[in-house]
Length: 553
Image 1: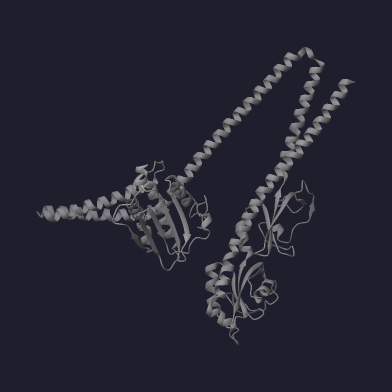
Image 2: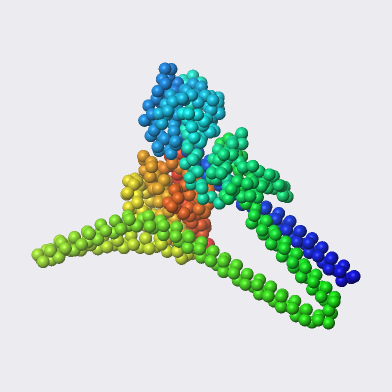
């Protein structure tokens, strides 16, 4: 009787333990899934917003153009040349650029189409003098899944005369999203799916049955193999686009983890209960049971020891990978400079060969003065090649060094030599303002050169599409300060420029580590680096500790 009761109590406790562990683990796993999914959804929303931002900016820019505003406002004009608008569409990646007169009559488009868009939601906003945004109305002329930004135009009296609309084909945007692991879609105020990375969702959100768990929105769907059957649903409103970003996260891994841990906990408790029954029934084998328990503890300890060792090895591997990634960023910059460096070395080599041949000829003729002049030129050219190679080798080094007294003018000159061919390729006008007296700071010539090469290379890249390409480098003292200024488009987000992996370049053009590494190097010197917009471009200011103050300390 007592044995049966003990067995029943053990089974009940095991079930309760398994259920509690399952419920706790499921809640924890779903909370972690919610956090990760929220991050993924925010990134997807940012990606769509940035893609469409170009259309908005172009619409605002064209609406402010005096010629376009005059054409829309002038009575009697109902045909604007499509060729002028086609160039704007091609350069911005827009599917169409439309000029609308009055309530919404199309008087010109890059595609040559005409029609009446007065019923468009975004046109209502434009007629009120605000920026309109939303999908293009479906129809025989303007069909397909197209998203539009419309900026109002004003006549001489300041009244709304029409609008400029820039459209983007959402199907083209979706092509690059098909491989995303999560099912993400954007719905309008009516609940219609406007854009998604799953074709199954384009017809509208799938039929869903809500089964909330611990306050989370869990939904069951039946929409094919690429849509999770049991999914955690999250949404993020995008008021600037008039859309809501939504994501369906597969809860199967969380359920499997909770089930596995629940079963493991229940099984562990059953084992413990069975052991207690066994001890209660067979006290004579207590020593053997203790030995078995010790063996199990030893196995578990060994397993934990192995796990700790594996985690330490993983941390060491991560540290090595981070160091290799940092070095790879510098070597990537060197690769971009390799073509110019080979050109810089090839010219002196050809000149050395020519001067050597001439010197031999002059020696044969007995003209030692001319031969000596040629040998002097050869020596100068060899010195120039040596400086280029030394600067390039120093830039590639990865070993850290303590801050020492450094002549900042020498670091600037070395960085200019490394980037000379790159600046020449883009015809960048370079102005360097160095004081007559040396400016000494606590830094390192090699690592300071790396910071300057990165700032100069970023400035040159930023001015690639600018009509005026002017690079200004200024060195001042009290405290030692280096200012690098360009005439590019400026900084998009000055607060995030020093974050690791932040970059505005195209994929494959950079790792986004250059400014982060430069920030770390300057901070290591005890200095400071800041970036801001000047209104005519970007400006970076590097401030270092004076060498005299360090020596006095």
